[in-house]
Image (cartoon, rainbow over the protein chains, first blue to last red):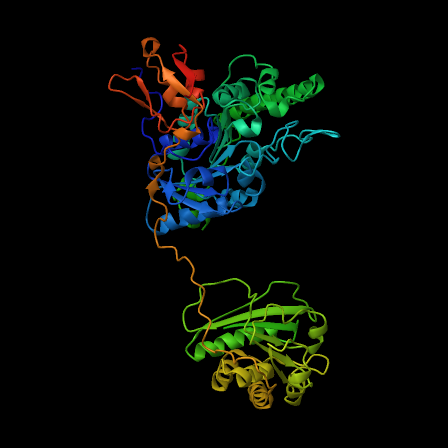
Length: 326
Length: 283
């Protein structure tokens, strides 16, 4: 048997209530492999509340806190304060929210958690819409995508606005660590989650999680679609540690976005001009990311401009939210 | 016992509900009071709530079916459906010069009035345009129902009313004495009735601890993976990508699909490099 390339430990149980082929389910499974049992996960109202907690069962071998959709960031700050008060130093405090609970409805609480320098990991599993309630558009829904609230037909041709840049929003808070995750690349995923675990301070992980019913494709294609998203530059894999960008997967030339788009029913209506428009957008963002990587690397040269973090409390190894602020 | 107060901003409806709750507490009972959060502007209609019970009160909702409705401004009778939800045999108490028999209310409702505006002004509370009528009305409420004692109201005013406590105490005493209750065939209010509705009390500690692996999700499946082990290279890609954690290994490192959990998504078959897994229609 080939050596396992990711941890064997399973902290997500079978019998959960995710749809067949659910990438958010695989994302939780991989995340907990990296973080281990000393973890508490705060989950807002989202697909994962339903997946994890059909009362009186739980699909997770770690502590779970259910909270309102807007409150994940606040709840992780509270959980960290509680862990500090109890003297629990080895606990990973994790918020695990969808794109709505992170980038739309959950945005102020996320911003607050990052700004308070809460020592916690916030994970956004991004299925690019309000899928739990029947596929409504969110700020994370990409340009042109069909949803029930961005229909196709008449004067509407899918979502007219581009996807919200949540990594940009998060990075404006200068977290200790932020990275994109793709469950189609489990080794890269687990390495980043383990790195996040090893650091103190606010950490953010953005996982792209294909959704068979919401994106309208057949469930066996989940992994292939995720791979295409990264290899076409739509969802680049990168990490930003203390302001330094690093792209973690560069496969030579990007694949054209066609294959990714054509594989999904939500993009089926797009014409050649639409695809060209999306291709231009993807190329622009990819070039920009390459430059950010090149330029941020210059900042670490000795004697040149340096990123000032970590913050006072983090530098002193003080992990508690309250102490770090004081 | 559930009491709903209607007033206008500035008359003291919110303070009235708080004072009532404080007085009930001084009587040794379990009270609760809170306002409806609306437009809290001077003159705008205001609603406040109080509950009094002999046991701890667990409900936190606004009051839809009150036992008592207290109206601090008679003008509200024409603009707000103050008796909405008032229980049969419940009491409507209004600050007005009118006799209780003149109050517009169905016969199943008991009626009482007190001229709290006159009482308040005679004790120097408020102005003719806006008399502060809450303490006189509270005294009337105690006189008409006995849900709190006059002594407790006096004590609550002393403790919690910062301005003119002595005048407010005297206004409450006068309200207590001068409240008028209409003759009624309705059954009298059961003062200590009204048990707090039974609510599910969550235990301290974890509330859902049964692992989900007791749930078998095989019925979700329309296609079943069949592994052709002779071609398997034991690369474990199938295991790595399974979103249902439904794949194990046998002692030799070959995959074993736990069919009681497999939902038949087909990812394992799709991702298997040597294509050793076949999805077969059920039945």
